[in-house]
Image 1 (cartoon, rainbow, N blue to C red):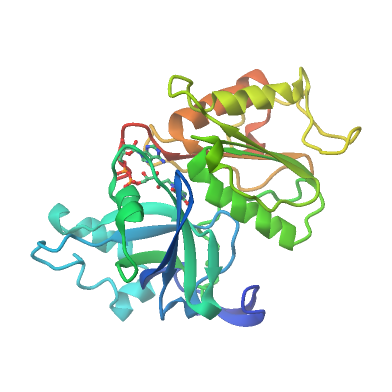
Image 2 (image 1 turned 135 degrees about the vertical axis):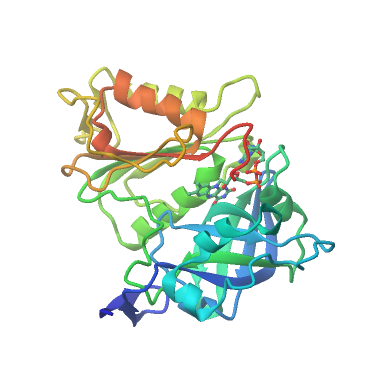
Length: 342
Ligand SMILES: Cc1cc2nc3c(=O)[nH]c(=O)nc-3n(C[C@H](O)[C@H](O)[C@H](O)COP(=O)(O)OP(=O)(O)OC[C@H]3O[C@@H](n4cnc5c(N)ncnc54)[C@H](O)[C@@H]3O)c2cc1C
């Protein structure tokens, strides 16, 4: 087993890292709740095990397991071996979950670490409160301080703790981030991390949320401008507001991602829309998940996440209509209208 040291930005220390699984389960409970807006609930989870929580940041995803209700014969948790040392050492949580009878599988949902604070033993997650009832949204709305969850999250002791990060701008100097409300936690964390790193490129962020009251304060680097848009009427398709704003920033062959007048921006012309060497990580053909492993140069890098139909719509706009090279764009269908996650 190889080992090396990695810098832990939260603790300001070096952590010894080994070739162990990037994710591990943590027993956590609700420490605090805060209503951020009509459609956002912030939950701070605490755990005595979070001292080894990974802090790579950006759009670091996690999985949350929600407990069974009080009358379930197995008690709150279906997998009796999730926390066995051997299971953790081999990174077996998902295979174990899949092998259980469906009645013994706790509901799993995917979320983003909004903020990791291992020193305080805390992790913050911002949940969208949506109208269609689902176990995660319902938990966020109704949970109480002390309620338990299990979080499958990054392990700071692993060389692979950044495995759940899909934001890979490489040397790109121009950013375009677009998403719906479920992508706001990731976009917020990406922008905060770039600000902390004193990233000096420029960029444009366009987000779409249900209501103007859902506009949150985002901390962005100096040369990144942020457009928060309200979806408004339910009859307006998801992504339409984002697409309109994007088009208003484009001339036929050019997207201006910069704040400063006269800056370079990024050109689209001459780039072919379709390239085959982008990893399509989607196990389900209905859910779009295309994440390039590296950007070819210092030009534009785009990151698009949210409802799958919206992401597809924006994909068509960027690649087919604007002719952008797909190797520059991460497309992530975070959820799908009318369908539960698992
Ligand atoms: C990598 C990744 C990171 C994510 N990060 C976050 C995050 O930080 N915060 C966050 O809130 N979400 C995040 N999501 C999205 C979240 O996983 C889904 O919204 C999830 O489906 C919610 O689970 P649920 O149990 O509430 O609903 P489900 O049981 O999955 O679905 C029930 C019904 O609700 C609908 N539905 C699900 N989500 C929404 C929604 N947001 N708005 C309207 N209807 C919806 C479904 O279409 C379905 O009809 C992320 C997803 C991914 C893949």
